[in-house]
Image (cartoon, rainbow, N blue to C red; front, side, top):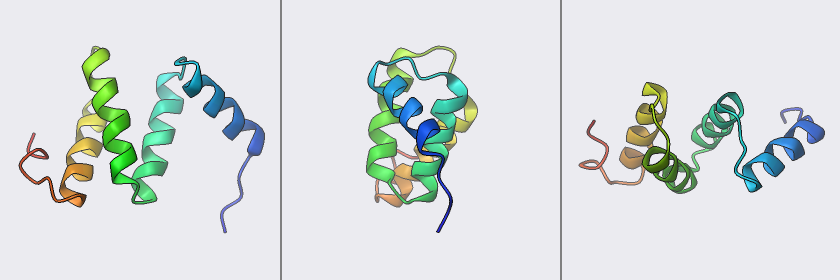
Length: 79
């Protein structure tokens, strides 16, 4: 079982809740969703982010493509 810094996790969750999640923490969240095979959540998070944020980061597009492929949406995953 991985150790978890509950204060850091709570801070990140609160910033996400208030839509103030810094890019580094956003990427941390995406990385953990990806590693936990939470593709549906990752897609929801990234689709919203990609519609509202510029510039887009290449890693975000990669995570989204992988999540689409993992959910059987292979055509949507082609970037």
